[in-house]
Length: 108
Image: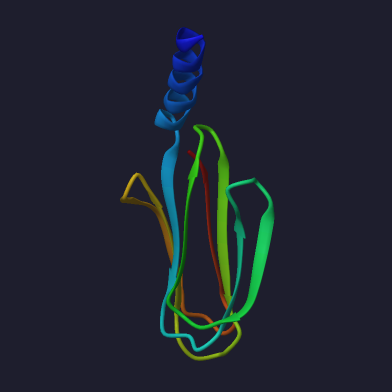
């Protein structure tokens, strides 16, 4: 019985060892942006009229596709989208055009 419980604990703990820390971040000088991103479940979420800065942190398994996109709702300002993987900047893009969209994608 103890061996079975220990085995389940070890398998659950080992599974967590293969998860990768991800952080999405949107910064810039634009007053308002719409943000779309792929969440930890693989679904796309959208947040409207967001004030910057904004971030979202989660864990994913290897080879998961990620996407982060932010669109300026104003003419003025900039928008920068960044994905951090394991604490390090991994993908980033900055846009300053009128009503510009900055997008980054990649597989972990």
